[in-house]
Image: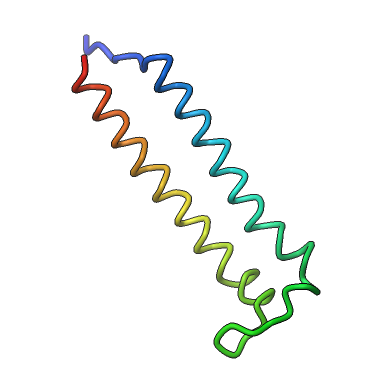
Length: 84
Protein backbone atom coordinates (compact mmCIF):
# COMPACT_ATOMS: atom_id res chain seq x y z
CA UNK A 1 0.00 0.00 0.00
CA UNK A 2 1.19 3.52 -0.77
CA UNK A 3 1.91 5.64 2.26
CA UNK A 4 0.46 9.15 2.08
CA UNK A 5 2.62 11.66 3.95
CA UNK A 6 0.86 13.86 6.45
CA UNK A 7 1.66 17.55 6.35
CA UNK A 8 3.60 19.10 9.18
CA UNK A 9 1.86 21.38 11.69
CA UNK A 10 3.71 24.38 10.22
CA UNK A 11 2.37 23.60 6.74
CA UNK A 12 -1.15 23.15 8.10
CA UNK A 13 -0.93 26.56 9.77
CA UNK A 14 0.25 28.20 6.54
CA UNK A 15 -2.55 26.45 4.63
CA UNK A 16 -5.19 27.75 7.04
CA UNK A 17 -3.83 31.30 6.94
CA UNK A 18 -3.70 31.27 3.14
CA UNK A 19 -7.24 29.92 2.95
CA UNK A 20 -8.59 32.59 5.30
CA UNK A 21 -6.81 35.43 3.48
CA UNK A 22 -7.94 34.27 0.05
CA UNK A 23 -11.52 33.76 1.23
CA UNK A 24 -11.53 37.30 2.61
CA UNK A 25 -10.22 38.63 -0.70
CA UNK A 26 -12.88 36.68 -2.58
CA UNK A 27 -15.65 37.89 -0.25
CA UNK A 28 -14.52 41.50 -0.55
CA UNK A 29 -14.41 41.25 -4.35
CA UNK A 30 -17.82 39.57 -4.51
CA UNK A 31 -19.78 41.62 -1.99
CA UNK A 32 -17.80 44.86 -1.77
CA UNK A 33 -18.96 46.42 -5.05
CA UNK A 34 -22.59 45.76 -4.11
CA UNK A 35 -22.26 47.57 -0.81
CA UNK A 36 -20.31 50.50 -2.21
CA UNK A 37 -21.91 50.75 -5.66
CA UNK A 38 -22.78 54.43 -5.36
CA UNK A 39 -19.25 55.37 -4.33
CA UNK A 40 -17.77 53.30 -7.14
CA UNK A 41 -19.44 55.31 -9.88
CA UNK A 42 -16.40 56.08 -12.01
CA UNK A 43 -15.66 54.65 -15.44
CA UNK A 44 -13.12 52.05 -16.55
CA UNK A 45 -12.71 51.78 -20.32
CA UNK A 46 -16.10 53.39 -20.85
CA UNK A 47 -18.03 51.18 -18.42
CA UNK A 48 -19.13 52.08 -14.89
CA UNK A 49 -16.74 50.45 -12.41
CA UNK A 50 -19.45 48.83 -10.29
CA UNK A 51 -20.92 47.19 -13.41
CA UNK A 52 -17.47 46.00 -14.49
CA UNK A 53 -16.78 44.48 -11.06
CA UNK A 54 -20.14 42.70 -11.02
CA UNK A 55 -19.84 41.40 -14.57
CA UNK A 56 -16.12 40.72 -14.98
CA UNK A 57 -13.95 41.70 -12.06
CA UNK A 58 -15.32 39.31 -9.47
CA UNK A 59 -14.84 36.35 -11.78
CA UNK A 60 -11.29 37.41 -12.65
CA UNK A 61 -10.45 37.87 -8.97
CA UNK A 62 -11.89 34.43 -8.20
CA UNK A 63 -9.67 32.91 -10.91
CA UNK A 64 -6.67 34.77 -9.50
CA UNK A 65 -7.48 33.40 -6.02
CA UNK A 66 -7.56 29.84 -7.40
CA UNK A 67 -4.27 30.30 -9.28
CA UNK A 68 -2.51 31.82 -6.25
CA UNK A 69 -3.80 29.05 -3.98
CA UNK A 70 -2.73 26.26 -6.35
CA UNK A 71 0.70 27.81 -7.02
CA UNK A 72 1.50 28.39 -3.35
CA UNK A 73 0.23 24.99 -2.23
CA UNK A 74 2.28 23.18 -4.89
CA UNK A 75 5.34 25.19 -3.90
CA UNK A 76 4.89 24.61 -0.17
CA UNK A 77 4.18 20.89 -0.58
CA UNK A 78 7.25 20.49 -2.80
CA UNK A 79 9.38 22.24 -0.17
CA UNK A 80 7.87 19.98 2.48
CA UNK A 81 8.65 16.81 0.54
CA UNK A 82 12.26 17.83 -0.12
CA UNK A 83 12.94 18.49 3.57
CA UNK A 84 11.82 15.00 4.63
